[in-house]
Amino acid sequence: MAGGTDILLKIKQRLISPIKIISLRGVPELTKIEQQGRFISIGAFATLRQVKESALVQQFFPALVQATGRVGSPQLRNMGTIGGNVCLDTRCVYYNQQAWEGAFEPCFKRGGKRCHVVKKGTRCYALFCADTPPVLLALGARLHIAGPVREREVPIAEFYQDDSLCCHRLQADELLMNITIPIEQNRVSVYSRFSMRGAIDFPMVGVAVTLQRPDNGHLINPKIAATGLQSKPLRLHTLEQLLAGKDMNIGEMEKLIEEGIKDIIIARSKGMSSNYRRSLLKFLIERALGECILKAEKMK
Ligand SMILES: Cc1cc2nc3c(=O)[nH]c(=O)nc-3n(C[C@H](O)[C@H](O)[C@H](O)COP(=O)(O)OP(=O)(O)OC[C@H]3O[C@@H](n4cnc5c(N)ncnc54)[C@H](O)[C@@H]3O)c2cc1C
Ligand code: SF4
Image 1: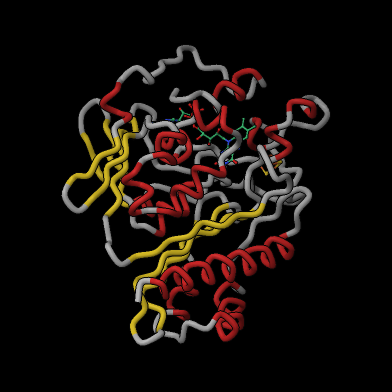
Image 2: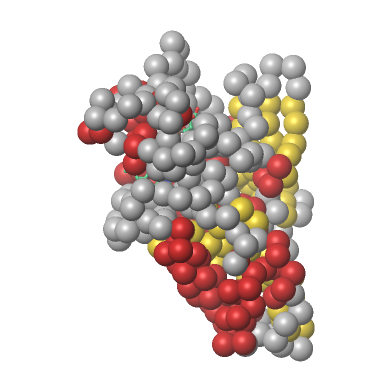
């Protein structure tokens, strides 16, 4: 357990019953945020507030400041950690609402044999909704993981898997130790999200965009990632390729954005249709890209 803001709730809701819980909050080495050459290293147990208020993060990764600042509430950001956010479980109203316990036949995620969201579904479609992973994906972060016999380093893109029952590839005896993000002097970044409520709510969709300083008014190296669409955060590679090298004119990009996201599979979810979330995705990309372009133009 790190901050316990998610796992303790699941224990209280009787969704999981661990035999033992070990808190690692008392290890100060795992909360450090420091520059290591051309990288910033963020300890997995740094709280979201520490990350948001870090001068290094503010200087190099403004989108991470925006994403950590949007998680839950000040109390949750004081307790919740960035490692817990990266390792966050997928969510679904049929799983995370205690009030519905016993009202429905158990679904796949509760050990049953059916899904209430996709009636004929043969798997769980719960959504990954954490705020910081799309930003870390767009920034090219790497995760440093330790187990009893070895340590390993993986690009965050390889950490996740398309499985709503277990969305990451961390072994049961492994711990995420720290996250390193490369520093790129001419990069701008923005995180933009939409949630049903203004405060204390998970994002329905969240989008991170990064860009390099423009070259003759063209988009250089756009990186775009999103949360809330599937069982894992997604890099939008097709859209990135369509936008790379194009004129920095948000009006002309509208069609390209529509084209670039039309084939993305958006998992069904109770109370928010896939079509609606596709429109939200388009809107958030336009907004984040527009803000990035304004920032990038100021760098000329
Ligand atoms: C009301 C409410 C609103 C919320 N709103 C948001 C929101 O808007 N956006 C959002 O992203 N999240 C939200 N959250 C979820 C949560 O608060 C955050 O995601 C937080 O960052 C989780 O961090 P934690 O340290 O508390 O994780 P914990 O609850 O301690 O752990 C979460 C999971 O990650 C594992 N874990 C934690 N750290 C490590 C590690 N270093 N190595 C390996 N495994 C690890 C734990 O074993 C557990 O399975 C909300 C939660 C609540 C209760
Ligand atoms: S998506 Fe289906 S299987 Fe998964 S938690 Fe929701 S109802 Fe259960």
